[in-house]
Amino acid sequence: MKYETVIGLEVHLQLSTNTKIFCGCANKFGEAPNTLTCPVCLGLPGSLPVVNKKVLEYGIKIGSALNCKINSFVKFDRKNYFYPDCPKDYQISQFDFPIAYDGFVTIPMDDNGEKKITIHRAHLEEDAGKLIHDAQANCSLVDYNRTGTPLVEIVSDPDLRSPQEAYDYLQVLKLTLQYLNVSDCDMEKGSLRCDANISIREQGDTKLGTKTELKNMNSFKAVKVALEYEENRQRQVVEAGDRVVQETRLWDDAKNMTLVMRSKEEAHDYRYFPEPDLVPFIQDEKIIEEIRQSIPELPAQKLERVIKEYQISEYDAKIIIQDACLAGFFENCTKYYKDTKKICNWMNGALLQEINSRKTTITDITLKPEDFSLLIKKVEEGLISNLAGKDVLKFMLDTGKSADVLIEEKGLAQVSDDGALKEIIQQVISENEKVVQQIKEGKDSAAGFLVGQAMKKSKGKANPKKVGELIRQILKGDS
Amino acid sequence: MISDKDVKYIAGLARIHLEDDQVTHLTKDLEGILHYIEKLNKLDVTQVDPTSHVLPLKNVYREDEVKPSLSQEEVLKFSVEQRDGSFKVPKVIE
Ligand SMILES: [Zn+2]
Image (cartoon, rainbow over all chains, first blue to last red; front, side, top):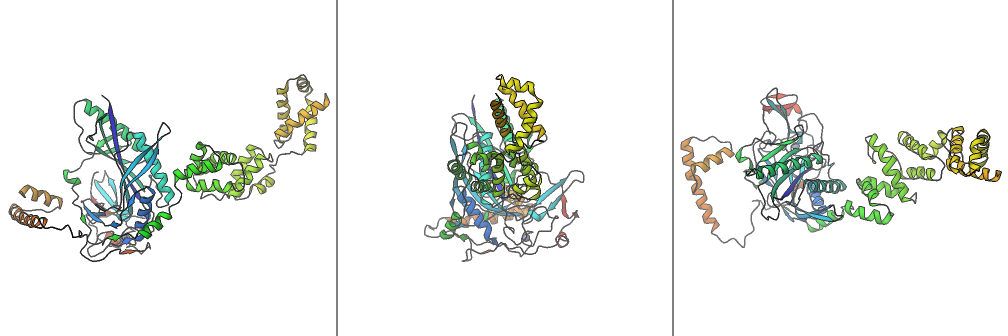
């Protein structure tokens, strides 16, 4: 029997505002435990939450970028549950009037086509505290610093049909969110988290099968592998004549499998009701429009534009647009050097290699587009060799000095001066009479040997192209 | 119809312990409340906007400016037990 896999994803994104969603505590990661809390985020009696204006703005920005409709009427609701990471015993979230709904993102397909994935809704809520489990001491430790960190939960429709599509959707979503500058989107730090709902059904069936919910995946790769595992597991259950049980399963990275989460039956009975401590929001159309206008060019549009405008390959363009700042750097370079293909080669080769090996980013290095362009120009003009160019780039990143200064300081300029080169070549010719004879007899490839010898004599500084030309010229004149 | 079982379930969700005679009593109370709601449900409210808040207020928010937080010492005073700057609680498993 043929089965079809149906997947929907829930992505939680921490917003990089200065403060938490309902109080003025700093929204920071990595501080000493329980040093970023106040009566509001601890849920002490008598305290009152007040919404951070920036959070609403970011929510509208995200919703718009995901092609969503923005709700003009927005309210918050209480989601009730008991767990030590939630000091109020309820989470302030949004139930029936989320900030954004009914949008889509487009993912690439194998056949060069595209597929629209519907964004069901995006709503605002607060994050919970952090629990550390100590198996030995048989206790758990709670740090409430994260409590009240602003979150946007982005819920897709069950439109994804394979773990690969889920992976692609996450890539597209993350890149779009990164362009908005509303979060650092770092899965390792937990600022981007993903839960997945997955079910299978007979091919052609229109009714959804029973789903399981997967949690605890710490990377996009883990999401894909966990979905592949679960897809297989459900198939085996069905083929054995059993039924898939609706449950939450945790991905175990070490064991490479999903395991049933021990939970109580009432876990999903959240008894939502309107948050009485927060009044509703009526969004002004003008403000929504202003925020919409502030959205920068998004990755899909940028990709299309740079290919067209700079005549570069899709392959190169895709690398460049992985980071809005990298794309900006590329575009700036084109103002100083016209050969866009060469800029791509240098950026996507030597420069990215350096950036990656230094574990830094294009924004954190001090390289100026004009300096980088000058370096490429010097190499292309033959002033320095390709290899020397890569060294100069390293020095530039180390010292912040320009290519010009470094070439001079390190004495890396190639000798292209005819007089100086001819002298060296004459020496080489007189020392290698046999080879010269071979060349004269028509074995042109032997010239390479003479070029090598000349390079050696010049300690690598001779311009090899020039040397080759001169050798042929001199030998021709001889015969 | 509200049953004893419903009341016990709701009490469980709210982490409230009820004695048997309290369950009987509350079952009757809840039954009465639901009767009243049923009456309200029969009213024509097509011309009335749903109430999401009792106060005639909207759009109350604050600027994104950091205010001082409590110190770890002050915060941990609320804990029954503590360790390494954190609240220590009985082990919970996800
Ligand atoms: Zn706070």
